[in-house]
Image 1 (cartoon, one colour):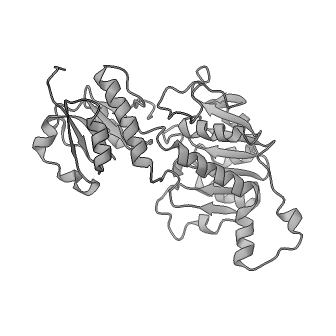
Image 2 (image 1 turned 90 degrees about the vertical axis):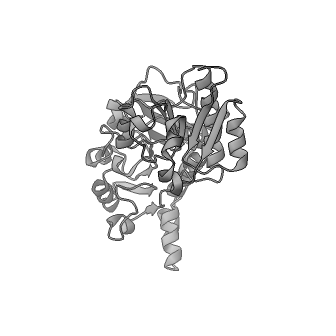
Image 3 (image 1 turned 180 degrees about the vertical axis):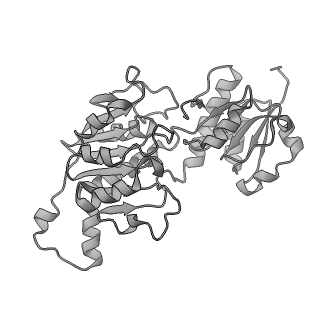
Length: 342
């Protein structure tokens, strides 16, 4: 890269002036062009020709010969669809990075809300309120399962799981977690200052993925947060629910297909599972005929756990840090490995 060569950055996501100036401030050679999501498909071909860096939400890419200079694509979400991942993989020399770490604050709060709701029987109390019932034997029926002294299992100790573990520390919960590589508990991806568990200090025990069932036997609460890959498709199914403690609770903020819906419905109906908070589903929007709507003690939210007014600023901050690393020839944060899918 020559000293005076322009660095064209395309954003297929709308930016405000402050965010655009933050990106351009990294280096005087940066030439930034941004488009709204709806306009991204109409980016002129001449703009693609010299584009070196792309910020996108997964907008379809032009053929490689129409974007020959494209060296790096930064996504605005953590999970990467397989088709998009493979498209980038076929472009020799093009790096792909995720937004992992930029949504941990709001998602950590969502999970804590869910754990407290389940433990303090909020779904049941809401049902009584809607029916205008002051329940008999309310103390026995609504006695809480407190986080303090409880065991919380985190399936997938990534950026979300690490933030949940940090928050749980002050509650006095015992945290267990699964991870692909238990010999390296530290976080190698992007970690916002003051958040998460960069050194691996907040879990009590780390299990290899193959020992998931052994971990589930210990848990009062289970938080599901791994990426969706062929290996994690229906990772939590009938066998896993059978391993859980009677009355255990589940929170899913991963992807819908990681949890077997049919098995989940059976588990809550039988009482094996005490309740669940679900933000993701195998089919979205969740169809009106889905049995989940009427499943007992299941609280449903419409895939909003990662939403925040601060999301775009957080993404831009990661992007700026990665641009600085890119210009210095350093390894980028959150590089996607096409073989493992994240």
